[in-house]
Image 1 (tube, rainbow, N blue to C red):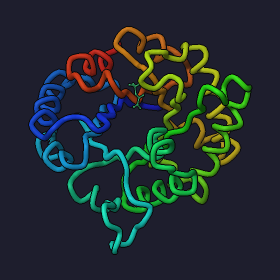
Image 2: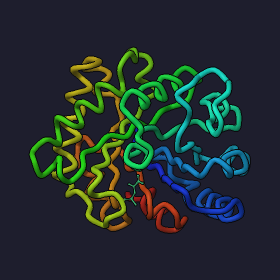
Image 3: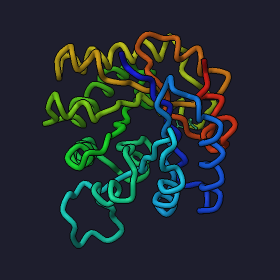
Length: 251
Ligand code: PEP
């Protein structure tokens, strides 16, 4: 059985005090949520403090990015995966569309980051998703398949235990325009079959595939009712502890 995952991506929001306040409020309101894994991804400057304050709770902590480099070195501004592990985080979001679009992150870089995470015992949340032009021209599946196969290149069957996939159609991120449950399910089913082609049917059956794109308290249950949707990666609605807790407690 795939345990659902509800992950909140705080993007570049919240000063340290705000991050701690939201994290502590969430810790309290999802304390009884055993039906899913709960993850929040604060900015790097809040990562260690939030990890410390959530220790012993059922809220896990993710970084929003990591270096492609596994060895420490002269890489100004970068943060290696083992440094993230060192402060108590357990997950890293890699290949978010904002990083792909704004910082030119390639599938090859996403692949190196995913490998770095796995090698240091972190779980990588690998994001894929087509933009509007790609969907409208009928290329959504090809785009997603390419992102997936290149981002997961070289990973073994056992590495895949540390990979979560997030399908985030770019046209749905921060736009309020969620994919319908049926649209999302169709792509999730496609992604699962692509994982099966790459890694076999056992891995495909076990891999969690999250949906991301304007997930809110009022649309989460319709999405979670779909067979291949195993959770959500939530941006805007995760910034407020009460609305994120509502999403976590979708059932
Ligand atoms: C995201 O940042 O990954 C995201 C899905 O954002 P939003 O929920 O705001 O669309």
